[in-house]
Image (tube, rainbow over all chains, first blue to last red; front, top):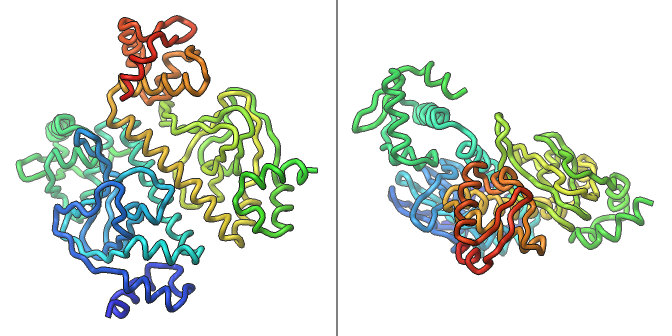
Length: 224
Length: 224
């Protein structure tokens, strides 16, 4: 049953699928679980091996957290994205801990870490795919780092608002200042101050429920 | 001639060396160059493909730079370390630009990027080694990011001074405040202020030539 459910998806997602043996395909499917995480669940916490997570619907947020609870978003995963950093037993060279939360109700296929690692042990192409997926996330994280380190706050905030509007297809951003601060690696106070400035400039309208983009072209200018 | 010079080193460094064909080994050696970079040289600048760099002596610094010239050190490479991020034609999934400087006069073996990529095309184990090297640097970079994002300045500075003393085997750190600020991703003013504080506390002595560690055990306490 697992086989018929997972196989068509894995064939689409994994470039190595048709190159590995029937037995290996079977073994992976038998060790895969369809799980639905309610919005707000912490799916992965630190360096345990939670397995390889394939997102089918919803949204996962990957972030790092300091001892005193401050967190910074690294990236988010949506439909069709794969999370490898949650499988520390698969990627031995990853020595840092990430957290993964479900931001919305999220349906996922989770492949057991040890099972995936066992099959990849005798299939170099799986190893290559896994490492390439991790390395491409390295690029995402570097982007975040450059944003945080180098970019002025008005630019960071305007890029976030533009991206969010494009992603959701709406000019209305239903997030708190606190949430936005976390996404862009800043503090709530700083975000509130900058939003007030944007609002005074007639670029956005700020209400208790969220932020509405009023002047798209001026917002776009700020992102440049 | 290249073969006799490079082969013993490559045999030690590359776990795949004995698994690839005689022709491939020959091809890699023929496309390797022994280069000495004088202190201060920029070896790699952005996203060109400068090749795979193996450090034989000296020290290379990898860093990212903003449009306005601010830079942050990601890590440093010493004898026996390998630089993969300088070979963008080898690692297609790396989409960010790094800079590499020689911090001291540095002897390196540089393997042409296209030659290395060509050989790795039909040797999965080379690909795996290359990606694993890159992924382990991902962990280094995450460490830097966490330092910058989460750690208080006194802790960052004391860790830097301790590490530097341990690395050079000397209690004397011959760096300017500006240089230290760059290493720890801060501003010169902030470093000077914190060094003045350390100096008032009798932990270090600050002179024009550099910083001398006076009270090692107190410095160690600050790193915890």
